[in-house]
Image (cartoon, rainbow, N blue to C red; front, side, top):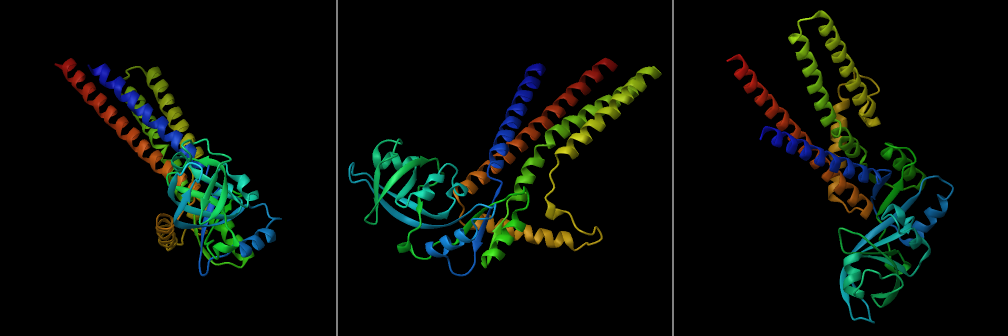
Length: 338
């Protein structure tokens, strides 16, 4: 029975850990984009197009976007209807939803989510179909997987000033706030940056907990063998193994530990740095969870949350397994002494 419990615990731990790695890896696909909430008046498509022309020589890609709620879609051929949220774009729409880059060249094109496509056309293979919205016809370029009911299209002049968000591609990892602020300065805009670099780093660092826990257990096991050994040669061998294991663990942790650049103070004697950093991160987290996000950001946050949850489950399972093994080992030792 003990072996069954141990094997089951090891399987559950490995399963949760592999799921955590999978979700965190998926989240990193979207970690190279920062989102800016523009302050003041939103831009119309003409203003956004002018900034796109002005910035075309820069390496950074970006997309202005906004949302409109409760748009009614109709397919006149099938009679299907659906209510969706409309996402309006100007720029590179790949930064909003990966795989829809062709939308930048389709003035009357759109993408819809899979559930809406099924309701409108009776199939999710909807490319080439025509959908009507506010008496305007749009050609469906494709279907996207979405957590929400959406229609994505280019902003038009008749939509007015609706582009109040900007997604900016980061050319350097972990430099979300800096590159986004430079974009705002060049464009003459004001806005608040939603930087997810800290969340991504936290999720990746949490993955180190399980290897660290196993490493500490291995070191303690080898250290226990030193005390139990009676021969000098054996004690020296176990001591060398303990030091080697500890060195490998330290190297692994520090090699993969991710610390965002804004967490490193310029002067270690600046004790007010951490208070200011925490206040900044608190405001940033509130901004992330209170404002609208593109599908890429929603998917990233969803994967980050699942990755952290699975990782904590794996750690708890391993702790329980080690405690169970320690208790069984103690009981066995007590029987031997008797």
